[in-house]
Image 1 (cartoon, one colour):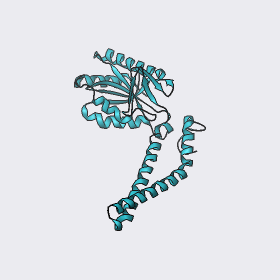
Image 2 (cartoon, rainbow, N blue to C red; image 1 turned 60 degrees about the vertical axis):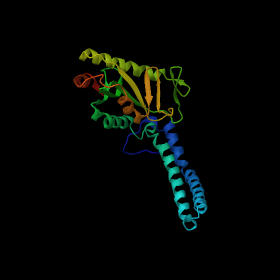
Image 3 (cartoon, rainbow, N blue to C red; image 1 turned 30 degrees about the horizontal axis):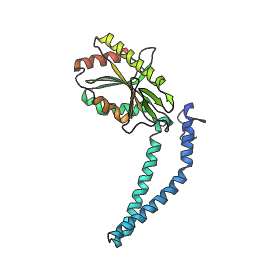
Image 4 (cartoon, rainbow, N blue to C red; image 1 turned 120 degrees about the horizontal axis):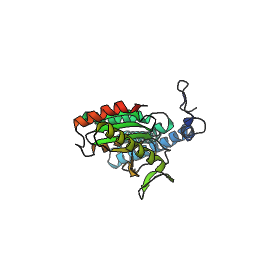
Length: 255
C-alpha cells in the first residue's frame, strides 16, 4: 500500500478505500506527469533567461542565464508540489498533529512563562491535546485535519466545513473548555475561563489562517502560539500560573 510499513500497524482510516489512501495513490501515479510538465516549464524558463540576457547585450552569458532561470523555475515547481503534498501529512496519517503543535507551543511560549500540558482529560469525560496556562490566561488546543479540498469558514456566526455545519465540532470542545475551567476554579479558588482552539493541519482556511465562530477558534498550527502571545498579559501572576499548572497536572488525567 502507498506509504505503508510492515513495522507500523495501520489504522483502518488510512487503508483500503479511504480518501487518504486514494489521495496518496493518485499522487504517486501522477508523478510522471508532474515531471513532464516540470521539464516543459524549465524549458520555457531557459528560453526566457536567454532572451533576457540578449536583451541586455550579455550574449556570452546567455546560456548561463537560461540555465539559471530554468533551474529556478524547476525548483519552484518542485517546491510547490512538495508543499501541497507535505501539508496533507497529518490527514494521511504520516505525521501526528499533536506532536507538531506541542513542539511549536513549547518553542514559543515556555520562555515567556507559559506551561504546556499535553494529553489531558477530566476522568471519564472529554480529553484534549494541549492545555496552555500562562500570563495571558488559559487555552485548550485540539488538533484536527480535514480533506485538502474542505473549506473552513464562518458565515453569520456559524461554522461551516464545506457544506456541513460545524456545530458538532465546536460544541464538544467549548463544553470541554467550560468543564476544565470549572474544575480548575473549584480546586484552586482562582476564577478562570478557558478559550478553546483547534489547530487545523489540513483543510482550506482564509488567507489570514484564522476562523472564529460558535465560541471556537480554528487556525493554522504555526499561528497558535502567536495568537496566545497576542492576548492581554498580566491576567495571571506567577503564583497563580504555578498553582493552576500543579492542580491541572494533579487533577486532569493523562491520556
